[in-house]
Length: 188
Image (cartoon, rainbow, N blue to C red; front, side, top):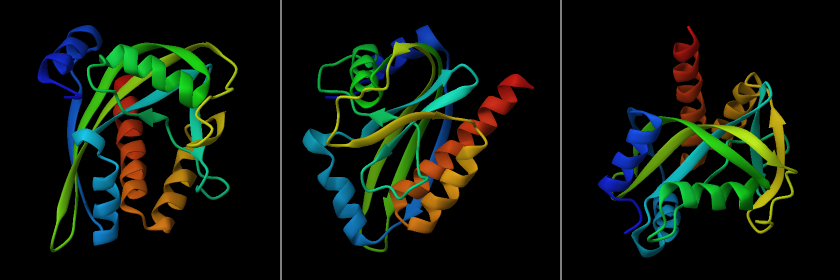
């Protein structure tokens, strides 16, 4: 098993109680099939990290992203791996950095569906602070580029994601918007 209730409870104890959000996206069958094929050994989650570096955020671009599209880094835990170990490994692979976790910001439940089928997904979203690293990521198969950006750029990222009409990217756009709302509530 990848993520257990006990693992989530430990993260809540250390980093606070996350906001809970449900999302639903209508997608064609080919996308349900693609998501399902990514669920190796029943994996139905990712850990998404909003990493602050100075007054900016660390973002990644995948190889298939068009110019100008970036998003918060994310990745899955390995079976038997705890959150903190998996997060440290994924951040190192995807960004070439080390971080300190600050807040368990949000836990999502996502359904990607159509008239015939559906697939379930979860995201565990954390706010973190950059500690060190040179953005020399090691996951060259998945990640094309790592850089920092201002929050204001996420609006443009969201427009690009929605224009691509891929359910997973529409979800990422909605995730960015929800995180921005939560963080603005936190500072007001």
